Image (cartoon, rainbow, N blue to C red; front, side, top):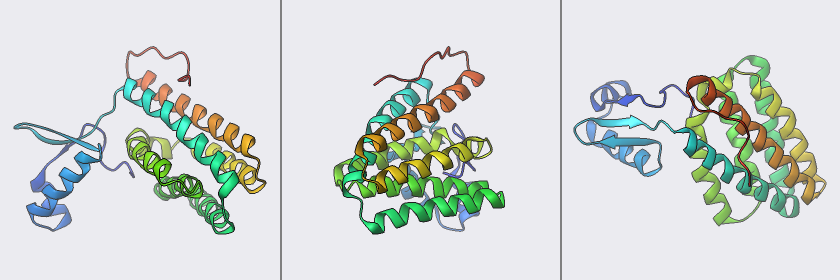
Length: 207
């Protein structure tokens, strides 16, 4: 999630056993679990690699993110408890502190914590599972490059507005702010693909 291992990088059991100071058995179990979660892929006689998402996979993921995140925020506006709201605000504070300290790696963590607090506040276990699956994939698309752009500061302000809409029980505003938040996030991701490939990208994904 911190982007230390880039998409497409090969994961060698031998190197991992040395780095993590464990035997090959737990390394293999961990790699299989990461494969089940969609974070790594394996090829016969070649081993394991960090998954390198295609543009089309990224587009589909963000189409679903707009649906899922918007639903989470709308339900959170109806169901969030005071504890839920406190958790959201704490994640925002932690992210702000990390930004001020220049700790971009922690920004990645706290940003995800914030979005998880929204999903949890919807109090719908099926929706929360969908969120978890999507964010596992989103981690591959962000990583270090995202943390070192101006996007975290932009996201921080948008997050604060979403929380206030939820606290005010404004369902439609919470849904609309979340939808716009993900649309802008996709534009940023799409631009990166455009800069690093021949893919022509004109518009964000449509619902």
